[in-house]
Length: 260
Image 1 (cartoon, helix red, strand yellow):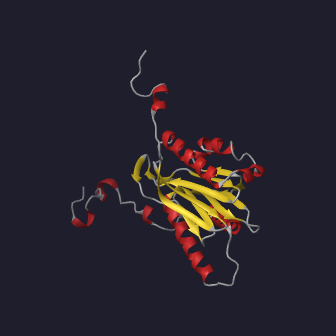
Image 2 (image 1 turned 60 degrees about the vertical axis):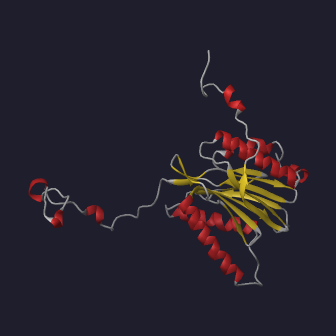
Image 3 (image 1 turned 90 degrees about the vertical axis):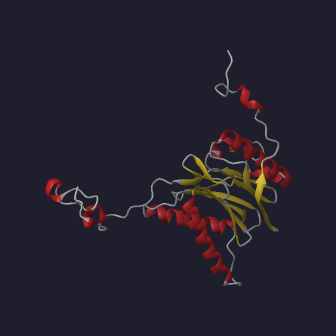
């Protein structure tokens, strides 16, 4: 090794050749994050006759480590719309700042048309598609809820590719496999939404959060729950799972001590 202070840690040039510093050059293509590290899991949402219920737990996982237990993944916009974030937390924070700036810009024009949920979803989907087209995607799956121009419940999703779709019930992550079957029992189509009350929708979403806590290793028993109607948004960020029971685990093969 070359032990001169200006070259500490570098192999000797006369033995190993000149030090290759090409990796420090910035004239190559831009490098972007391709593997999110700190992530949030499922977001679940369901329509009812007067609005939409949405929930997401407060956990941000560092890989498989339940590292941050107070990360709020639901945010309001202009007291008319609700956005739920799944996926990379740093990209979520970027979108949160972006939405804050957009909300301030909208507030400076009091006589202008306020973005409703449908308009906000379209805006976010274009943003996600734009970033994807630059090969620098935002690694998130978003749910947007609120009311449309006719004051009917609106619920739609967009992902890191800019793909958009809508449904009476939606879920991201593991929830798309475990929570969706539960919600589809009550809202299999748009016509059935008119038969679901607010209380029933909240009950179903709470049940989904309990199932996800039981079966998803990246979930937490504290979560945020929001209800958006024409009267505004009711958001609670300190919800806790109730009436937990792990009795079913004894019937799962491979769980705990087994007897033959």
